[in-house]
Image (cartoon, rainbow, N blue to C red; front, side, top):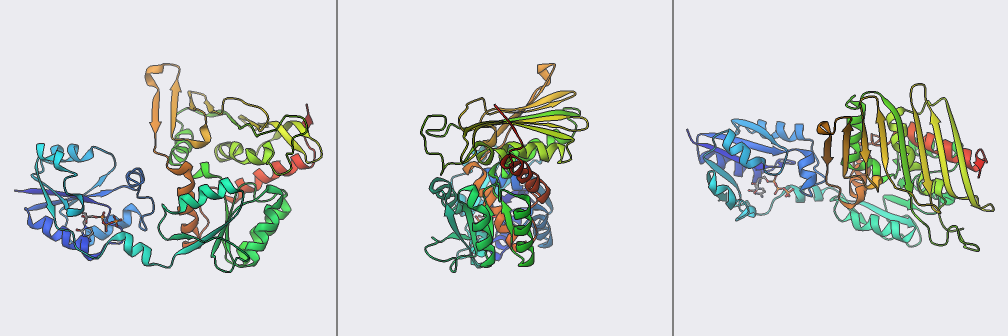
Length: 424
Ligand code: CTP
């Protein structure tokens, strides 16, 4: 029996795929189809498949051409599969000519002519594009615009006078303007993704949320860390009991702002520590321990009273069975690490943890330590855009940052602006 294997993503299955599978099957007696997992695709730069792995598997199965379907999850798996399954022929379309010649050592390699004029990318792009404009800080907007080009189905359009030409807006203005900017965009019928905190007062946030819901618009919290693969895995590992019960979550985020801390510096256009870093630093705490803390204590070093600019802030949370701490600074520097202390071990994310692509689970006996690495492209921004576009398309809230977390971040920011902190 001649065994043939072929691999692909098979997103929105089209006749190019079917013709490939038919010819692959004709090369032998038994056809194995390897379908790429979403995570593996991400590492290959394919970040916005329209269909989930399960849907893609179902579509290939429905062709009746595959005798066996497997999932391709990691680089180098092809060799393992070919050996394990005693494959005689490896085949893919001619867009890969030469690329898999190294497999000749293990089996015969055949490149089949690709069907002209059709591809999953084109089918995805045919759908109407989501046009996104940006408002605010030059650098953040530039990053966002640059990342948009990696997401198919979205297109950037500069906002000149009005929001008429866009479907959605990314807002990165000064936090004190967020409420007004988000409100105007929602009133104009536009979906919004706004840098966190979306507002400085709970009541304002709730009003914006209601406005979005009433008009069936998405209002997304723009904390990019939440969308990184390593960060998502870290949450799962921490919650799975691998480090026992979580005893403490401690996160530090600092970045020195030009002039902050120096006499006479104009900080009015800059973000203070609690706004610039508070949301990111609080994210793992609320996502791991919840928002039902018993008490909290905020300590701030204010460097400009008039605009309430904190050069450094420390927040301590006390929960029923655990504690947490946040240290954020624009005029103070520290190691930007995240440590999750557990009863059996701890998770360590090295600085800058908010651009997580790597973390370690460490134990008393270092021989048991485990390292995890996940590719992070574009600081998580492109995944954030994919999630935003998906939320708009499906009409469902993205599950990356839930409402309760956004609201509790704003609650702390509001307490700060209400002078509910100890000054140092
Ligand atoms: N294929 C083909 N003819 C096409 C499209 C794909 O023969 N018009 C083949 C590919 O060469 C590959 C398999 O089908 O062997 C699965 O390809 P996949 O990458 O999933 O499909 P594409 O349509 O090329 O996807 P994308 O546009 O996302 O790259």
